[in-house]
Amino acid sequence: MDLTEQHSTLQGYSGKHFFETVGKPIQARSIKVFQINVGKWCNQACRHCHVDASPIRTEMMDENTAKLCIELISKIPEIETVDITGGAPEGNPYFKMLVTEARRLGKRVMDRCNLTILEEPGYEWLYEFLKENQVEIVSSLPSVLENVTDNQRGKGVYQKSITALKKLNAIGYGTSLPIHLVYNPNGLFLSSGQVQLEKEYKDHLYKKYGIVFNQLFCINNLPIDRFLGSLVRAGKFEMYMETLVNAYNPATVNGLMCLDQISVGYDGSVYDCDFNQMLELKSKGVKHIQDFDLPTFLGREIVVANHCYGCTAGAGSSCGGEIV
Image (cartoon, rainbow, N blue to C red; front, side):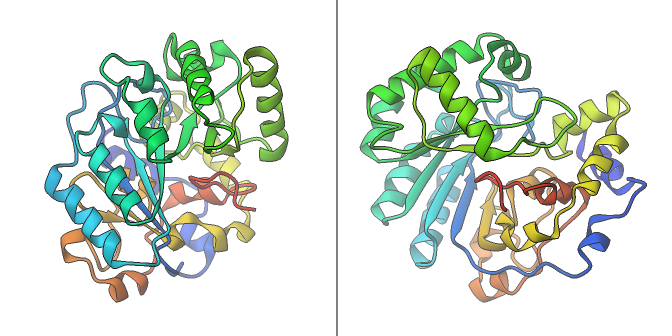
C-alpha cells in the first residue's frame, strides 16, 4: 500500500479514534534514546515489515546526515542509548562510524540486527566489530519453530539465524555481552505474555541448539505498511483494529517509548517513533536535525493516529518489548 492508502485506511477506521480514547494530548518527556533509521535496504523482505524494507530499496542515510546525528548526540548529555535500525542497518556504509563515534561518546549502542546479515558474503567482519565495540544486539526471531519463522521472514532464514546465534554465543553474546530476541505475532492476535514466552524460547533454543540469550521482547504488529496491506487484502482490517481497541490499556500510556526518544530518518527528518516515521508523520516543532532545538522538541505534543493502538494494547508494546 502506498502512503496515501495507508493514511486513508487508518483514518477510515469505523471505531473510536485513538486521540479520542486517550482523551488528552500526550506530552513529550525527555530524550533518553536517540534512534537512527539508516535506510530501507535489507537483505530480507519480511511479510510483516513496517519499513517495507527489501534488497531493492536504495534509500540510505548519507555521511553528512550521519555526522549531524553524532554531533547532536554529543550535545545532549541526557541521551543514554543510540538505537540503530533499518532495514538492515549494517548495510549502510556509515554504520561503523555511527557505532564507533557513539561508543566514543560513552553511549549504549543497540544494533537491530536481523541475524541473517551476519551470514551474508562480505559481512563476516560484523561479528568481531560488534564484540569489540560492545554493541547490544536486538534480533527478530518470530518463532522457535522453523516453518513459522520462514513463513514470515523467508525460506532458510531460521537456519541462518540459528547459525548466527551460535557464533554470537561463541564470542560472548548471551553471557558477557547482551543479545535480545524479538517476537512478533504471526497472525491477527496480540503478543503473548513476555515472561512465559521468554521461558519457552530459552528452554527450546538451549535444549535443541545450546543457544542462550538475555531477554525476549514481545512487540505487537502495528497496522502499517506490509502488515496493514495484508489485513486489507484479507478483509480483516476492522477485525484487527477491534482487537487492539478492545485491549486498550491506559496504564501503558506513561511508558510509551515516544515520550523519551527521538527518531531520525535516513534523510535527517525527525519523528516521535519509527512507526510514525514510516507513515511520514513528522514530529511537531522540529522537522529536521539540522534545525534541532532542544526546548522546542521537549515541549512538543506527540503526533498520534489510529496505529498507536498497537503500542497501548494489552501489556503495551515498544522497541524494548512490553510496557507494563
